[in-house]
Image (cartoon, rainbow, N blue to C red; front, side, top):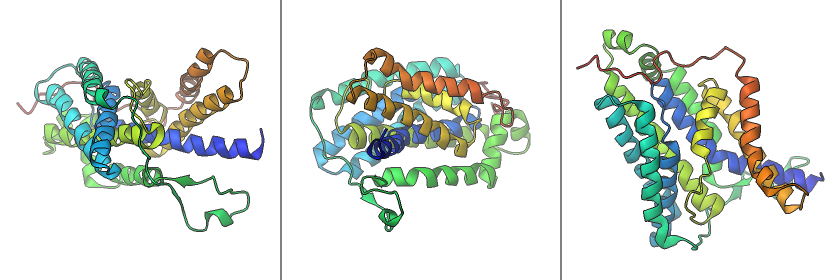
Length: 305
């Protein structure tokens, strides 16, 4: 593999890993509050379709991203209403949300199938090209990509260095103890669901208007479930989520490069590569016990009633 291929692999790894990182960070916040959401696939699809539709109609890509974030938040608040206010099973609610999102996104995106967009403007950070070994094609990304890692650090600070984060983690560990300490369980879980939905919507928007630059039904390709797996891989820690997202992004990029080079392997096997690699890393890494699942993850709490 020559230098150009390595540069392309690095660039693609970061680009394809970005939407998954946003999605995983959102799910970490939700699960830290005790909510496991299997509907991320649907939320991401809704965000992707809304972002593309609004961008095409208005000509403003950032307006599309904002609309996608709001749509993702509203969609995930529906999940929160079922799981928190109504006490419904979280897994069943998430799956219902996923299928609902698949249908809604197909309806929203149908008029735009086959259309394209220019994509978000990319730029390089000042002075990057002066670094030895860095070519002009490397580190040439849009603002959503550049904000991904700082966002992970910001969420880490919010979860582990603030009173809000302490309250949220307490709710995820023991809602009864948090309620006894004066915390409003439902309100905190709604906040976590709102943050998760916002980030999932942005993830979908970046996928459709920055990566694919078009709309296709089911374009998320299972990323919602990969994000749930990467939450476990990261041990519910935002900074470890960066590594997991890059692993998946690198696998996707490697698959595309192998197909472009005409490697004599079935394209179906190559399409499996990102998911098989992600699961392999998950199995290897999950042996560590430094970070464990929140104690009340997936449990319905109705003590405030």
